[in-house]
Length: 310
Image (spheres, rainbow, N blue to C red):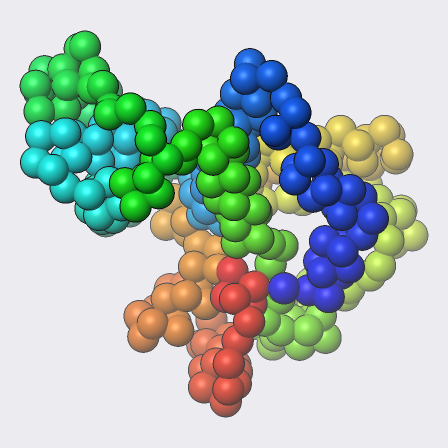
């Protein structure tokens, strides 16, 4: 994680938030405490979705499937087979991971593209709903009724709203820390040098870096069009906001979006570094010169920070 992250985390604002998190929950009425708990649930879910949407550039509509597996299966294992809830959660997580791997394999193995990924996840979510409603083991249409909460933490009982609040607060904080802003593996100068090596044969291409606003740099160079690449629908939403702001700042400069081919739409710096680190084939992912630098950097580094592998 970057040093700035820790400075922000230790700022007076977050210290006040932490103090309020400790003091307020016991004073809140149950209704408002329930709202706070649900807010923390959605914070954790949004951070988890960022792994798929933010890092991999995909949009998943199978949320109900994975949430259902975690909630319904662990509860069913407890009620029907007497399996401890904590162990049931581990089993549910393994099954959810397997389902996610199957979905990814179907889409990426056959290079079906981003829209197909959305439809596949939606189909799996609908199939999961059918299975839950038609299988008595999972409670069917009537659902499952858990035992009374007695505060036994070993049975995943939180002892009421206050306990549930603390559990969700910890999960939300952990999920936010995991989704820390990524740190580049190479410096700006190294990336410029690599780009110049790869593009050396193109006489009409120059590689430079700058600080400040992109539109100001473009105006200083006399450029009137910005070319922006888009891999997925999630990229388009972010790029559209940037393009509208750039137009507001410099109306004379237009933005042109270029869609990547399906063969390269799934590639990101995080995926490339992770595949290489785990010994996967790099053919078609990066140029040979970049692969050589990756090999030198990852083989000589004693350890990489978690943020560098994102």
